[in-house]
Image (cartoon, rainbow, N blue to C red; front, side, top):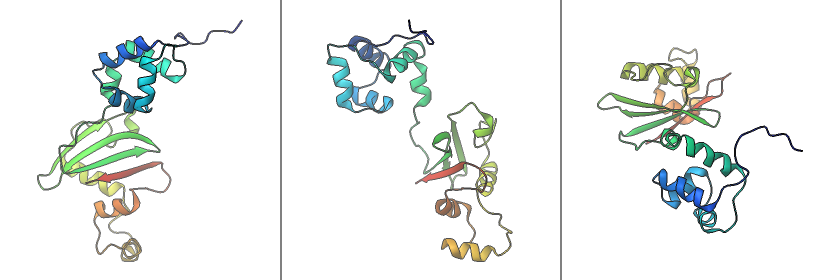
Length: 182
């Protein structure tokens, strides 16, 4: 007899999948995007006669108990002109929206690990703190032979955003990086 290690069903029915999707108020296309499958797969799950097994079973169990997980994982609409994605390997840690002209910064943390957040425990960083964060993802402005480094990057002057666009803000010895979206 197989030893049971986790408490969740072996399979879910089409009705259970449809009920969870509707509870989350998602279309089939949006649900498909959320669970990383095609819309056609969601249609097959919902209209099929056989129970569905696989990783979706665990996710459906979790969403049934904690429907707020979908909302917590949803990337908010971009409302400011510049968006930075602060990443640890392939994990989104913090999304930083910025209006440079108005000097406004809004952040969204997607991890509870303070060491992986762009601003640690700070939830509303100032524009000055944002500028310091940018500089921390670049080589120092006073670096020896900085002009050679800038020339190597094809940049005319030291600008942290331009440097991060070229280097993804990668710093030797860590696994963090930054993707810029304009």
